[in-house]
Image (cartoon, rainbow, N blue to C red; front, side, top):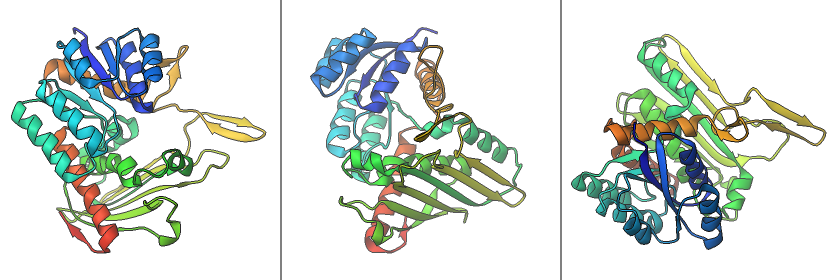
Length: 336
């Protein structure tokens, strides 16, 4: 298969990691990178031996043969919306690190504009490529646990990340959209009602709560509880931050990320080694979920195969995130 000509937009952690993955993948021809910060862009461009740009328009003008642009910028509307619309106008497919946007109106505009232009949107939904979640999906499809009755998903992040981001984003926009994508995928259903709560005593210096618990009702009556928090403390040892339990009429599926299978013990610390999401092997080469996800989405771009999740899926998750926030504000159940 001829490598796909791809550009990377956004030079944060995800954009930088994805650019390095694309540089290694035989399915990718990393053609350009673009982001903010002249030194950061120049350093990464030099490392990867590709042109680096500070302006999206300039990059698109100089690389009119691009086959896809991977967007890993901030998802705030004032950043994400104009960038997406510019790339759609150029007729270039988009690989998108979610959430799609941070408002329903912006997400709708992106999706509707892309559909009218015939431009595909391929969402980077990481949990779809996580082997344990994929195994759970197959077990459900094979009928091993019967009909799903209830799901519980806890996905928490360390407080230091929120402090690093200066509490700029809600935990719902930071991580819950991943979880909502997984819950929609595993159940094969849509969320119809949402009730969300956050303990007032956990409010922080910023305007966003540190803990959010959402009670979801799906359109077939299936129930789910989703817990997201910035509050995982910086303590010694592996801290469980991802737990999923699926209860069916004939069985149960449990997923836990409490242990990675490889741990470094020192007198003053304990560190879990990443063996799944973005592990480095053989002198720093990329392996794991992010690599598998990127390779498969490039396959979809090259062959025209439908991606696991598209712009409509991204829009559905934005609508649920918005409903969670509205429920937090009003204390009421929100119907979708």
